[in-house]
Image (cartoon, rainbow, N blue to C red; front, side, top):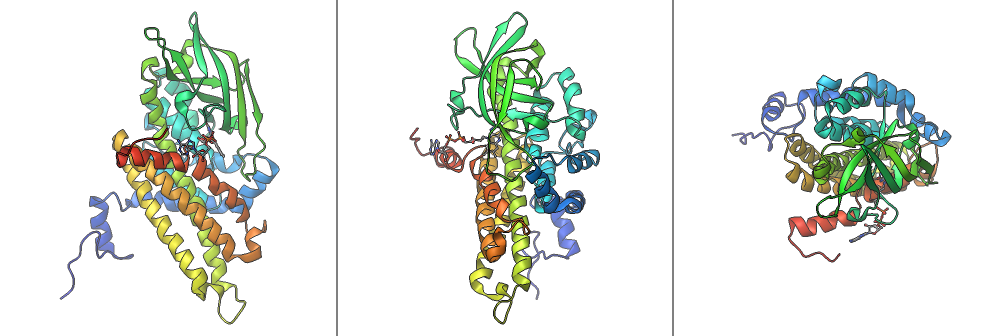
Length: 410
Ligand SMILES: Cc1cc2nc3c(=O)[nH]c(=O)nc-3n(C[C@H](O)[C@H](O)[C@H](O)COP(=O)(O)OP(=O)(O)OC[C@H]3O[C@@H](n4cnc5c(N)ncnc54)[C@H](O)[C@@H]3O)c2cc1C
């Protein structure tokens, strides 16, 4: 007698019936539409590949051709509302786009920022005019927006940010400093997190402002980074930057809530960014280990190399599942549950990526550090997923306090 089949227990690749049953019941198994999106984006990414991406990065140029083509195909705005030119999908779909581009060798960092954070915040909290002004361009990639929250004296402690917006008649005057803001040079505007003063209590509360790149008083300088990526990071000086009243996105009194609307997508997308790097590195390592022979068998036959690569494959798959869960919760509108899941997914994917790239470099021996194989550049790239947008340690703090109920030390 054969064992009973369940949607999760006995389904095998190629088992059409089980797959169909699972599709309709479980968010753990991607729908045929999402599988098709993965394939289509992967095909596009492979037409460019890591040679294109690294070449652009080393020349200090943006990956504009790929960005434009992905925008035209509807991939960059797949999460944005259809009525504003988007695909009407969710963050789960945009995470698929970034993961597949990264797997193909083209991890476009600005996807995390432009359509995921800025697009989401404007779609959820912007005025009708802000939506019309920004969303169609963010969706088709013809306009880009960067996002600035990190400050030199606040770092991980975003309660300490001191960029302040003061009212001046109908206008705002924004003053402060930011660091590590990605991609300003390719962006039309930056969505900055500042603070406004509560008229009643005098307390500072977070608020979001759109600042066009050419606004007087807004200066930015590149930070020399050891990253091989088309996007640069910048330090920013805001000196009494005069903004019209409608530069404020959303309600002045609901800043924190609105901020979190963008930060969960940011974490889910950073998980997808890390997963793309991890899968790219694992594929290169496996490919190499299958054919490189220095004794009698390919090096992939030695368990000293095969087992660590197998562990990487398992860790990547686990992190992918967690990322899917986080995306699913977010897209269902459960911001609170999505917060925990997004943190866990970002952590798991960041760790999987750092370990996988390390093992991949080791697998290629000397070739792991040549430009030809494109793995050395991933060593620094994978550190991004451990540090940004929230560090590994701050996620562990979050889980310790919120999931486990432990007291905090800071
Ligand atoms: C490539 C890249 C791109 C980025 N892009 C952007 C962007 O577009 N926009 C933007 O606003 N920011 C961006 N950032 C900034 C990023 O979000 C910050 O670097 C990150 O939040 C950490 O802040 P920090 O660098 O000031 O580190 P710090 O806060 O100074 O932390 C330093 C170390 O101390 C640890 N630490 C701090 N507090 C605690 C604690 N309580 N318990 C345990 N450990 C602790 C941290 O985990 C970390 O290991 C980017 C950063 C990088 C590297």
